[in-house]
Figure 1 (cartoon, helix red, strand yellow):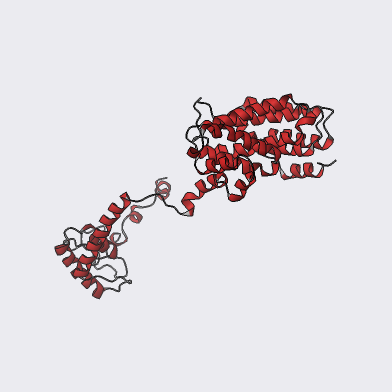
Figure 2 (tube, helix red, strand yellow):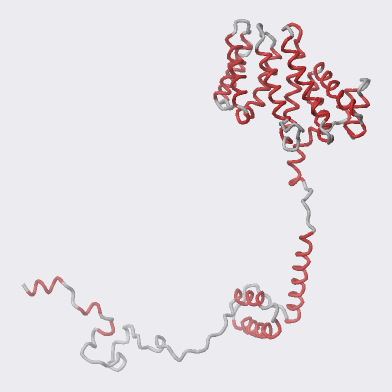
Length: 373
C-alpha cells in the first residue's frame, strides 16, 4: 500500500534544478564537484553579475532627439556632451540615416525655431476666417439665389415701378417710404401674371428685404399677400384660373429663400415672417383643393411640388397646419369633380406623407406610369 501511495506522487528530484539533482548530499558548487560540462552551469561567469557600473544615458536616436528638444535653454554644456556621445555612437554602431548637426548649427537651428514659434504666436492673433471655397461654400449656397441679376431686373423694363425696383435693389435708403410700401404690390402683380419667373421675382423681393433696415417693405409685402389670399378665396373658380397657382409658386419660392435666413428676419410685431409666408402658402393650397371641379393639371402639379417642399417643415413647426392641409387633400381626392389623373397625384401625396416624405423607387414609378390614366 505504501508503494502504491508513493507511486502516485512524483519524487522531489524533478522539482530541483538540473544541476542540483546529483549534488543533494554535498554543498559544493557544480564547478567544484565536477558536473558534466554538457549541462547548464548557472555559476558560469556569463550568469554571474559583476559590480554594478554607473548608469549612462542611452545613445539611442530617440533619447538624443528628445534631449535636444528639452535642453534648448541650457544648450551649451549639454549639447557639447551630446555631440561627443553621438560622435562615439556614430563610429561604434551603424547609423540609420541620422545625421548630427554641429553645435553651432544646432544652436542656430534652435534660435530659428524659437523665432518662428514667437512669430506664429503673434500671427495667430491676426488670423481671420478663410475666404477659400471650403469656408464660404455654405454662405454662397444660401445667398446665391438672393442676388438679383441683370436679366431678373430686366423683367421690370418699361414698368412704372422700374426705377423704384432698381433703386431698392441697390440701396433701399434711396427710396421714399411711399415707394417702399407700393413696391410689394407691383412685384406681386408681376408674379401673378408670369409664373415662369416666380423664382426671379422672389429673388428681387428677398434682395430688398435683406438690404432694408426699417422693415417697411417686409410688412407691406405680408399685408398685401394676406389681402390677395383672402380676395382669391372669395372669387369663383373660373376667375382665379392660372393666377392662383402662380401665386402659390411665388410664395413657395419666397419661403425657400426666406428659410435659410429666418433668424435674420425680424418684424417689429415679434412674429416670424417665414412662418407667416408658410401659413399663407397652406391657405392658398387649401383654396385650390376646395374647388368643386379640380381638373387643372398644372394646378395640381404645382400643389404637389409645394407640399413636397414644405411638408417636412410643416410637420416640425406646425403639425396642426399640416393636418388641416392633408384633410383638404383627402377631401379633394374623394370629391367626384376631381379628374382621375389628379386623383392619382393626390393619392401619391397622401402616401408620401404617410411614408415620412420618402417613397421607394417602385412606388414612384407606379404613380409616374399611371399619372395619365
